Each structure stands twice: as structure tokens, then as C-alpha cells.
Length: 270
Image 1 (tube, one colour):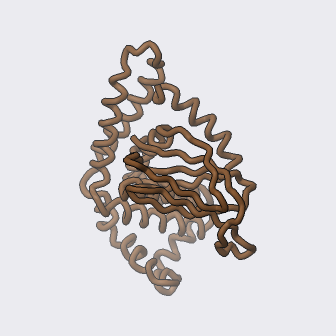
Image 2: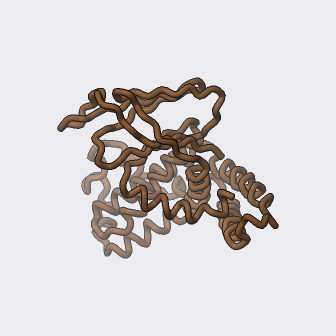
Image 3: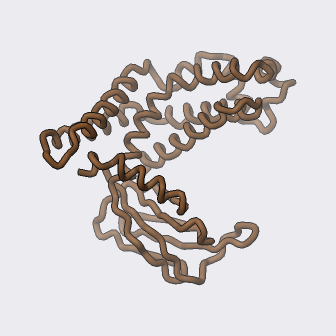
């Protein structure tokens, strides 16, 4: 049922999310990697859409980071396997009168397309970058503070002075080979976020602990009203979830909150 109604739920959540700050805490390394990649893809596309040299420089650095994170493990096939698992789950809802066939077919098509595109990706995710000596020279110098000045990389300085559309075309060409990864992880994270039900909780004097008692989850989400001056510090293991709310001063230095803090807690698991 949650798959058929997912689009409506997500639209409603987006409206509600404008009134809150959402904090997501991954409970395993796999979800941690997906969240990092999601953030990097979003930033790369944001800065690519601008025209300034500085924006396109940051976009290129984000592409380097995406390749670094995505290349650490066999991420592509891990995502393909997860999408296949979700596809099989969705297929079990076929001919269910309580499920919208149109929504189900749309979700299946999206999963199948993402899997096909990832399977079509050739070789190692970062190989095409390593074969480009010019990009590798920028990547290597970018790890040095101030290492991409014009006297270090005059060819890069020349590229930054090209027309914005020419720079954007180059950035699109370097990002496009790894966009199927973004499509796959977006589906997985969307399903993960839609899998839980939020519960209102109270942190007495800013402290909250919940014994997990065998509960399995891959991620927890906290929703804190945007106007509340509290920041959650989250830690968890297989036995307990601990949340400590701090009330930052003018310099955002953490200070234990002395008031009771109300928040919404969601356990997410595929």
C-alpha cells in the first residue's frame, strides 16, 4: 500500500517539511554512503546551473568527490541488487484491488529504467576520469590549499575564462556518465524515507534515549520545528538510540538544552 500512495505522501511531506528542519542519521555504512552521494550530486547540479567561474569550479570539485565516494566500493551492483529486491516486492502487489495499477506500473518502470542505465555503465565508475590527464592534474592540485591558481594550472585558468555555456557543456559531459548512480540512489532513498511512520517524542531537559530491543532500521529521521533553537546530536548502536539536544549561543557553540524538546522521530527500513 505504501508504494501506491508514495507520490501523495511525498508531496504532503514536502509541504510540511517547509516548517521543520529534518535531520537524518544513517545506521549503517551503506546508507551513509548514499546520503553523502545524494548531497554531492545536489550540490554539483546546483553550481552547474550558475554562470560564474567560482560556481563551475565548485561543481567540478563536487564531481571529483562523487567519483571518490562512489569508487570506494562496488556501489553500482549494490544499487542494482537493491532495486531488483524492490521490484520483486512491487510485483507482489499486482492485481491487488487496493493498489493503483497506474502508480505501480510507474514505479516499476522507474526502477527498471534506473537498473538498465546502471548496467550499461562501462567498467569502473571513475575510470573515465583517470584516463583524462587534464582533469587528473586539476584533481591532484585541488587537494593542495590554493593549489589551482592560474600560475599552477594555466590551462584550467583558460578554461574558467571560457563562455559559461562551454564550461557547462564540459561539466555535463563529465557528470553524465555517473548520473545513472544518482537515479538509482534517489529511488532507494525515496523508498527508505517513505517506509517509516513518525512518532512525536519528548526529550526531557534536552536528553532522549530509546532502547531498540531488537528493532531493525537503516536510518532515523528527526523533524524539529524550524523556529525551535535546538540542534540534535545523535548516536546509536544496536542496543539504544541516544539524542542530545543543544541550544546554540550566538557563535553556535553547543550547550545542553535545559528545556523539554518536542520532536518527531521516524525509523526507516527497507
